[in-house]
Image (cartoon, rainbow, N blue to C red; front, side):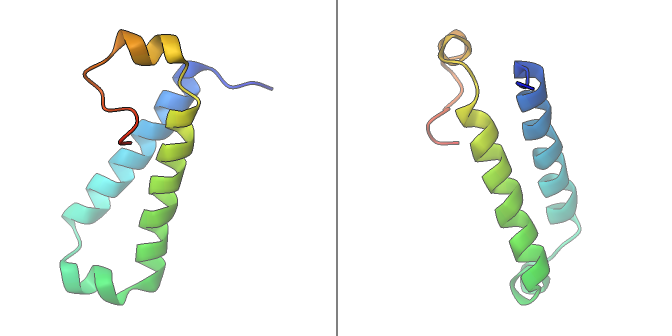
Length: 71
């Protein structure tokens, strides 16, 4: 079943919240020495990137201040 724009935006928001919450409680050394944590961050970034690719062009044009390609 196709997902809606709201679904993709929710995926992005969920991953951003996870990254923000986790980064706030993690110092650099812990992050660099924890392979599982690093992999979870990479996966979250991948999910964000894949979700952004599904945002319709019309929506992207409606919000030109968002750097869609950079995401």
